[in-house]
Image 1: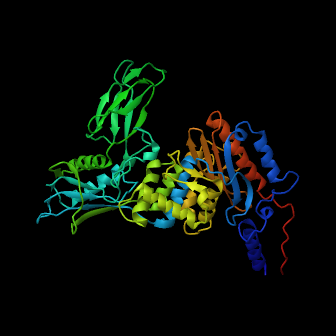
Image 2 (image 1 turned 30 degrees about the horizontal axis):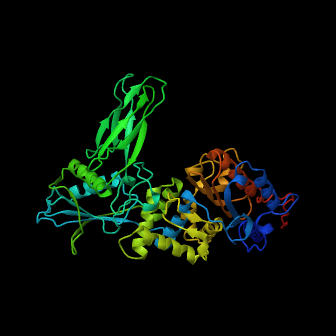
Length: 502
């Protein structure tokens, strides 16, 4: 009898926390009514705000399980979402490809009878893997060497047919070598970026020490950087020299003698050349001679597969994309969706059509979005707060995809893009969210997990605000905290009654 009572009690607690079909906002949010109702509380906070009330904004808070709206203000206003666009990209990628999806990178060629030579070109066929890095390329070279291959007689041929060759989205309207604006490519590596590590010389006035990671020969460093006096401010910068292949990097400025190191990041002009050069470097280290250079081409029908390297599962890739707001990964995903849900080559147009179809499938009104890319770099993107909440609620309600999707959102005050927000707030880790920033744009969307209450999906988009990001983010965080605390269920003051047994 006692065991039955205990089981019923546990079931009742679980049902009260997250289960059962809530019918009213008060069932979801205990503080919805009361001496100062949630609606009035938030209206007053907005009216008293210094930055928010002067900006264009919209927001919505709703039950993640039932979609019941708790509070909204301008929920149908289309606004620039910045990197919160990745919420849609990540959700659609998991929905259509599955969390277990892996990107293959294939190596084809014909071997000599003794197996020591690739008698023609070694074809490298990519499928848009956004997580291919030097370590895996090194392992590929090591594997081919272990098979006894000592020479490639026809050079490397990079097969990029899975994507088109449009490197940068035309709607970005920028010409930058910054790493966060990386080129796309079906064969890409190291997020199509290079890392320049700068360390001080022995004394002020000495040339700074500059190395690449990984240390490869295909980039030429033009080092103009000097060592500054101890305590001086570093003024380092790096840029690609606009020569024929843009493989020369110029480093300028100063680094103080007491500064350990500074890392600078640049995008690469040619993803296939970048990956091919890395492979040549690692083949040389493994004792594999490559006769000929690097070219572009198509893998012949019936070519022999020599090696296949799989990416980590998509669920982990989406997690990295969201936590670190990786623009390169997002755009690779858009083109992958275009190539897989339609036909290769993957393009931005095809990928955006797939994202639009995903939103339509959730019954998001056509008037709620305009998309130009998957990362949020474009100022042409528009989303409404209610569209984002619809996506968030849909993913929360899918038990197959929810764990991977939730883990792509950063934990309040702890990691990712919200590690510096909600600090000092009680239960800050009950916030999981994706941020978005562009000039004049601040966005936040994700989930709240009020104590002993139902989870809440939310979106707050702000455009055309005055001042820096600190002011507007403080006000938005305050509104989010208000909902989190209002919807937490207070602890019961009634003593627990246990049935006595003989």
